[in-house]
Image (tube, rainbow, N blue to C red; front, side, top):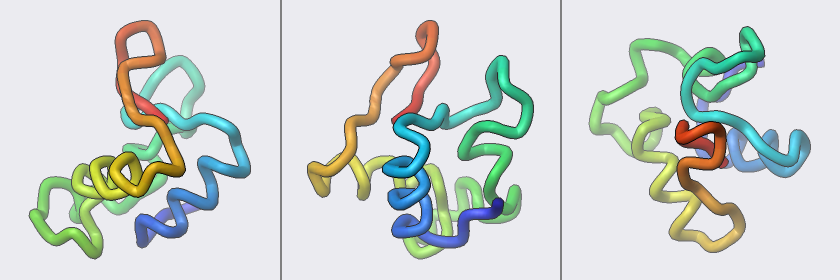
Length: 74
């Protein structure tokens, strides 16, 4: 699975129930690992997962915070 939009990420979080932002104890199960590395920190809200976290949390459908042993996720 590879996310290319905030909407795809939102849908996956609804499907999984939760999703860490960065790599954790489950290999391959994080936003970091499921998106194009070139998109990160690009400052383009259409493709940048770092910016999607704010978009999704602000929309009010999902919670974002440090839920995973002090690590960020949805």
